[in-house]
Amino acid sequence: MSNLEQSAVVEQSPARELAEGPGHATGADWLARYSSSLMGVFGTPQRVLVRGAGCLVWDADGKEYLDLLGGIAVNALGHAHPFVTSVIASQLATLGHVSNFFTSPTQIALAEKLLALSKAPAGSKVFFTNSGTEANEAAFKLARRNSDGPGGARTRIIALEGAFHGRTMGALALTAKEAYRAPFEPMPGGVEHIPFGDIEALRNAVDHTVAAVFLEPIQGEAGVRPLPAGYLKAAREVTSAAGALLILDEVQTGIGRTGKWLASEDAGIVPDAVTLAKGLGGGFPIGALVTFGPETSSLLTAGQHGTTFGGNPVATAAALATLHALENQHVLESVRAVGQYIRSALAAVDGVTEVRGEGLLIGFDLDADVAPAVVTAGLDAGFIINSPGPRTIRLAPPLILTEEQADRFLAALPAILQTAKEAQ
Ligand SMILES: *Cc1c(COP(=O)(O)O)cnc(C)c1O
Image (tube, rainbow, N blue to C red):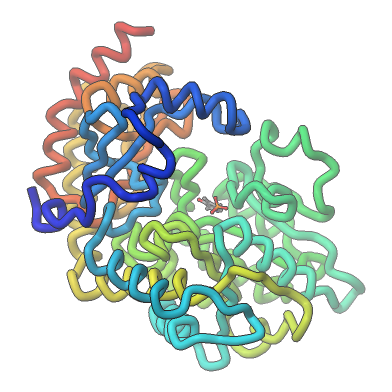
């Protein structure tokens, strides 16, 4: 056990007592209550989780899991990180919420910190949200404000096949997956999806009628699919020439996930905007739209966008603490090393046909359509993993995952794959 895991703050929170009442509820009891009270959009939850510490979580029946999904790339510092937890609690006890009629020190300092980490030029700005989809909604509105082209209005927005940008209507219009979109048509207009990673298709699509191009440096939901080398650079050239905004969705890839602050930072480009969320608050809900340079940063003017909760003192304190801890504990170096270690080991596992990703955003393909069964077998064996596709497994563990913890999973994986194949 690492120090972090030993310093779990509380065994059982007062909130659990409020939820549970007298007596003890088993996982099955909770799931019965769940299915009669929660909307069915997530299907049946895999487990009822009650406690976490570092990279470990426990379910309502006391079973322990190594969390290799981290709340889908969210719990950057694992669960119940002592520093982040204490900063959140003390901020809440000092000043929890104001409104955007006011500001607070943590909000301002976090904006400054994000601009510094993203090496944004002078005149760059930040807008805070509560989630990734809201960050992309803000970016969508930003794109709409880039409306004047030399030949008339810029009405088109380009995104990629396989793209996932969120579930609210604007972000959903940017999302490619038919099953997510079709029930909710008509979509907000003007979005076109072009083939993934195809620079020629991008060149053909982008002209002065395009307001923006949205890209994920690595498509997470599509199974951890990185853009080919040179694509971001080409996209920057094409969008600059056409006067279109280049907007990078780093909701999943940002904040150290790939071993860099931004997955795009080595691409040698300056985008017009970047969206962030998932890992930013270390588990606390917060998102951000960062706009690069004075021109893009002044597209949205006073009154044109807003939020009640976005950028509140607690969320921004959580993010400030998370970024501080990531820096001070030199977590990004470890992310690069442990990620490389896992990918090399995975490539040698029988039944694994391809390994992708960077840092601790890892996808691997299997030689059969058994990924959902692998997730189930993984849970039974005490590991939380995810299947974004029928034969693809995704790992997005806390960034503090150690090689020893990774070894536990790697050692168990052949048996998990075997169990899954037998269950088919
Ligand atoms: C998760 C995700 C989103 C949506 O974020 P939410 O917080 O779920 O709204 C958007 N874009 C990408 C790339 C994501 O991975």
